[in-house]
Length: 160
Image (cartoon, rainbow, N blue to C red):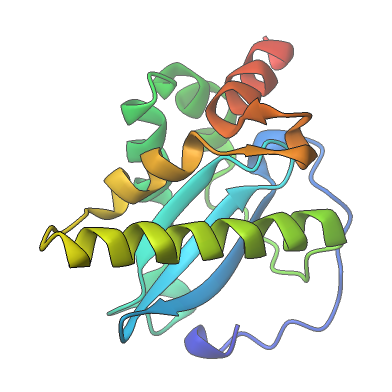
């Protein structure tokens, strides 16, 4: 990602732990930058404000707490503690190898922009967590027409 100075040129195999495989994409809405991160198996979304994220270090300092917060908001904090936290700092940066994930992320970005524009129209401000909660209710063909939150919950339960 150019924004944080990472020159990613290779595609790695998916992580053995499906909860530790995430894709991140930068997008803009109303002159602000956002980062959409999704789990590559469930498309469970986490949204970060792009402001202040200028290096790999600042990305990780924002990303890991945001993933934990989003799991807590969804009632999945045990899944985070058990399956994600132990590997949270063992990061390998690579290109997304699955075009279906990339396409689904593009659809989610369009939806996120619409949600942000609607909120601005109503003179409301959404937090990143509120936007991610809105996105987690999305139904996509990638998850076999199951809401992203339910797909992620099912993924966590399959690992227990």
